Image (cartoon, rainbow, N blue to C red; front, side, top):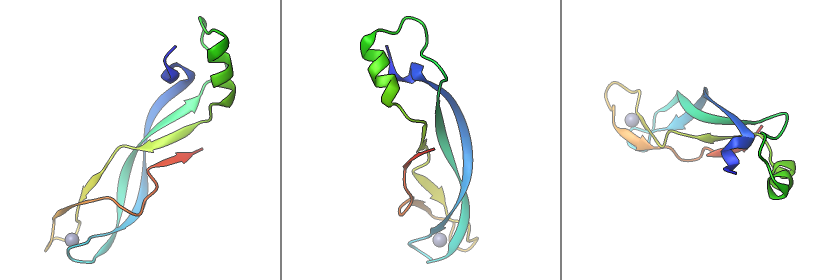
Length: 90
Ligand SMILES: [Zn+2]
């Protein structure tokens, strides 16, 4: 069974303050996350291995964005997101 079957997927946006490496400006950016919320019960068709893995599974979210465009109108350059955790347990 695909591990994704253990979770209900949804998308969420959360603000994060990022520093542009070009103009050094700090702005708040809405970053997109994929939220995987653990289901209350195993889907039907699960075997023993699924049961063991499901027991250890935790709800978590992963960052979808890897770049943002600088909000400074005099800069506007795209830069890589860094200094932000790209995965978090809920
Ligand atoms: Zn900038």
